[in-house]
Image (tube, rainbow, N blue to C red):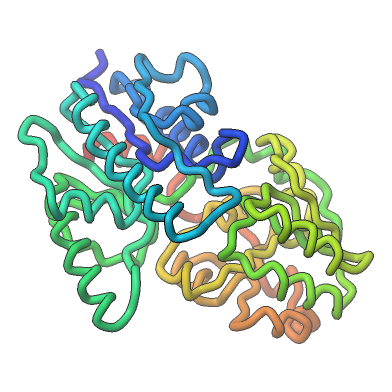
Length: 351
């Protein structure tokens, strides 16, 4: 017999200019639903773009929020301020819409904790949030933001975090990776691998793509960049910048095409700007491990996530690193953390 109902909340709803969801929110939501469906009734409160990306029949009820955040095109100050207003409105509306006791904010950012810094926790609800980042700035500004974060976090009854080394200032915490290993990855692990590097996912401003293209232009190795570009001019500029060994595609890949492209390469590269990504997790990093592809990433990212791969301090190092590295030196074993069945047991006990 199923227990009470859990309602999943994404108040952000990142989408492109055509209103299609971008990022990992739909996939993460479906994985969490699959973990809990046997023991809980499931509902969701989502922006329309995420709702439209969810498999029909997964939830007993889905309620739409009024706003979603268009990540494409204009990123001026006024647009950013309006977007923050939309986030606040969505959080407030989600609180009013939710009739269930257990509310799980599975997609979060600093503004959720800023909201609860100023607002009381609803008395009749159990609030859970997922954390995949807790470093927002440095210096005096960082101290102020951290104070707001801790105060907002204290309004939650439980915290789920995605990076093992996170130190969460909360009495009830549970570690759960971004993604868990499942049998669906097995066919992709068996695919033959080309001697090339792929860079996949949403092409946001925080990926150092220009420098990446320059490095591979110089070393002559095969590089494929494929994903949704939020800045169309950047996509065109990168195409013009790339030499014959570098392919740049502006494309929304289906899940199957995404995994085939990732699994069909010997290496995947994550050219993150660590000024922004410090203390964060990466879904592509885990997926690379799942399908048997060796990740190339900033050393700090690999260390923070306890994942083996080819690490670099700057992208310029890749030429030298490549000559000294090989598959035998960087074994890419199956993800060593929690698989689906292990995670099911642990999260039921936690909730």
